[in-house]
Image (cartoon, rainbow, N blue to C red; front, top):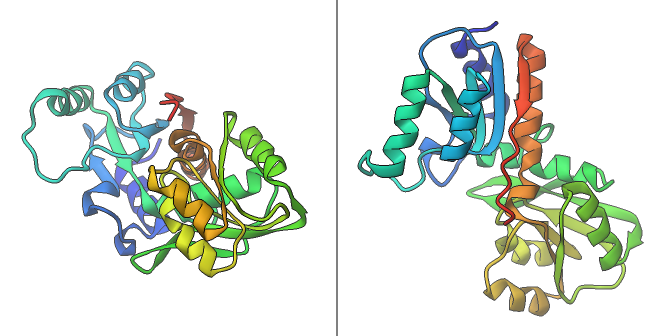
Length: 254
């Protein structure tokens, strides 16, 4: 068992939460403090959806760790589904810890670095600058691979389909990875001379961008590319504090 305060303090420091920019300051750190009971069982998941919260409670978790937390749209009334989620959390005593961009770019347990290693490449440097902090990684490939070969490796890593867009070179020697919705970093990839960008999803205009920038854009699913970090963080904390951990897989297919 461990106290929630100790786990949170350790995770905040490990992930540099206080100094890391994000879309909202409410996205990172402890979001719901729970009922004060000692933490024995962690459940990790990508999203703090209502279904995930209910399943975590059913599995008798004390702490839920997520990548996509509860608070995205600024201040809003606690009504409807937002109320249902918060009420279930308060009634159950389940604590929620969320970490978004700091987990994407972390050099040991982050989404991008772990996806890179899952496809058989070693990250060489930061990639994907957001307000001065990298949320992804770049890597070289030696020997080079074809677009189809790279797609097959990514497919095996995420356990799902991969779509390839764009018109990069047939011999891919360098890649940039930003998990989730990272297609907007193709301009940076082109500036760095990279041949391909691997991410989860893209907007309509990114199709033309990939062709015009001379890049391959590999789309492997927002959810599928972001399971790595929460799995690793949950396992890391469980090992550090002597707890049990379980990953709750609730894929969106997107």
